[in-house]
Amino acid sequence: MKNKLKVYRAMHNLTQEQLADQVGVSRQTVIAIESDKYLPSLGLAFKIARLFKVKVEDIFTYEGEENEN
Amino acid sequence: MIVMDRKKYKQLRVVVTLFVGAIVALAVIGNSYPLSIAGVLTGIVFMALVRVKAKIRTDEREATIQEKAARMTYAIFAPVIGIAAFLLLLPSKSGISVFSKGEWLYVESLGMVFAYLTLFLIAIYAISYHFLNRKYGGGGDEE
Image 1 (cartoon, rainbow over the protein chains, first blue to last red):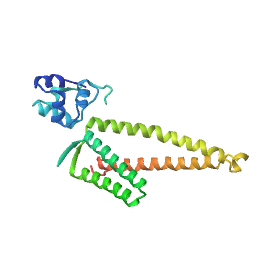
Image 2 (cartoon, each protein chain N blue to C red; image 1 turned 120 degrees about the horizontal axis):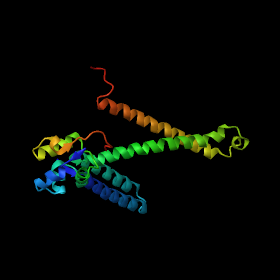
Image 3 (cartoon, chains in turn cyan, blue; image 1 turned 45 degrees about the vertical axis):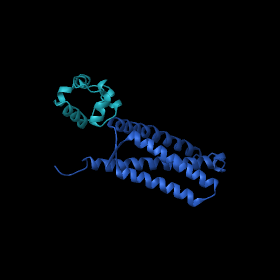
Image 4 (cartoon, rainbow over the protein chains, first blue to last red; image 1 turned 60 degrees about the vertical axis):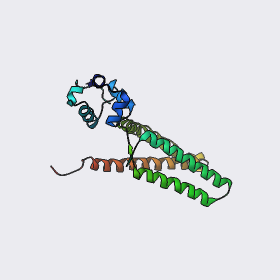
């Protein structure tokens, strides 16, 4: 799973802390998602997509089987 | 309702624990059992009120880590304690004279404690698995 969270965050001028507060997670979680170390839950993925007003698949891209979470 | 993240909740818990510890220490020094009971009860009631009145926000990554850590703990602890129980009980049941004299009574007792602990652990796992399975939609007959 790949994501463009960092790109969208930069586009919206948000810090990791601000994004974390707005979607209700810790900054460590945002860092982990951005560095592809943690796969967010479906709920969190939708929250992030809703925040940036895009579809989930615009931010998160599934690239087949791999070592997930 | 107050929204509190888990970090703040943990900090609050540490403060309350320190407070209760100090009260109990004072009670022990002053030889006053009612004071120690009052201190512990105050701590319990305060934490219960915090849990009821405040919404504690849990980070989902932290929850995932806790789940994995719990699974790993069970996967390591259950076999280790089970094997330990078996090894501690084995000599006493083998009929070797030194064991039949009761010289290894404590070892056998420890083995029994470990064996019951293993059973208790497996029982808790099985019961919680059963309830969580039902909670998350498993075990239903409807199609």
